[in-house]
Image 1: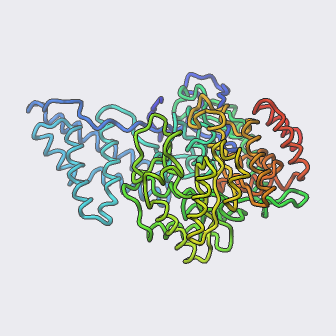
Image 2: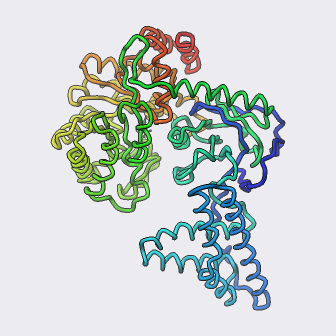
Image 3: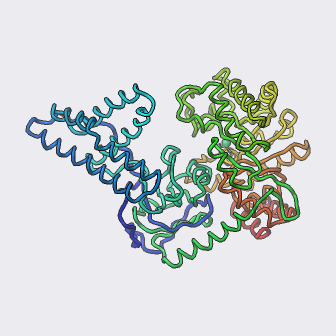
Length: 573
Ligand code: PEP
Ligand code: MG
């Protein structure tokens, strides 16, 4: 990654990157929309070592103290500058962090260490550790300052080492975040008013960057070749529909592109549901969420319910398994947000790209093909039962009994066993179709469960034998791949024959055109990130069921993903 310093300076229209104005970089489009703004880049976290430094000679200690003081005031000044430019809560948080950066208590502890001969980096690490221990023991509000103090430590060490400031910077003006890739932790708390688009060098259409961008409702392009050469502060135009990033484009043309995209967004915003084609064929349009806050946010859309609640995302940072009571509270928040509506809760899909510390994942050469999804139930006796108990309790408390589905089902036996367990809690069982084996035997699986939900992200990964996280293989994991669509068609046919619902909850359902194709293949519901719900519903409302079926036939008959898309566009417009 080209980790350039985050900028608080005025953005420049000139390409600082060495790429000529108007250069168009291509990637994989994942969230539609257009944004025009300057680039910001996250800095790496500095390594927490003092490079084996020996103690500082007595004569040099005053200079080392001065170096330390200069570093802390540079960090504090930058934070204060940002606080002055930001508004509301963001401004308050930045100002408070700036104050902590100059807090006499920890500064004094670090200076004492330097005076005793420790190099500044080691002194910072030691002093912060001392206060982190103290704050942690005090608990409550003090413990909440631990993260802030560690953040300051990383910034000061980066400054001392002459490295760019770490983490995702809080920009002074709306900006486009460009990075190699983004972990969920990098993007927690991103403000979509300030980070208006995401662009990454790595990542596929189903990577976490894509999922996060959908949740934030901001345009996103991943797997962009050459993105590393685009420096911070360069003005760029990101087109999340075309999958392009234009370096230093003509300003008037860029502004026009943003306006056009806004008009399309307005049409989507005007859609009020429920999900149906123009001739009234009902296809429920639902939302994917990861917690109560996301569910409450989804109520602002015309989503008819929740088609996928990814419960594992609630507990990614937990060392130990949350108790049944705590889990029930978390699940109840989502159920409450959609009282009287369908909510599908997925049991913990831990493993591979979403490890849970308390699930005790074994070291595996190939975790995507290892103990993940429903397979964690075996080595964790009682884990699934406790989750089902919590889900049932949340259902009772809210008066909204959810449907419950298992991830990564591969065999009929697994489905049968899961269904029996779910029914024993009085809940409605279903399974996800993410493994080709399950799609192929969907008819037999449906003898045991009440519904299917197709996870096209993993179904594409396993059908195409291509890592969903790999940018290089993004064309293979494209859900438009006719082989993937053929498996979707098979599962949908099995559902129709059994008279049971078959939804799609993978990212494929977030692409308005593909959503129409899925409807044409016979799926009965589409569940996408809340930010995609309106666009999907609006597109579906514009086309007839026959158009969807014709588009599906065209896509199924295509030899490539690109041809499938072209065939569908020809019918659906
Ligand atoms: C999927 O695989 O399509 C899916 C919805 O599950 P996740 O993206 O959480 O693996
Ligand atoms: Mg999956």
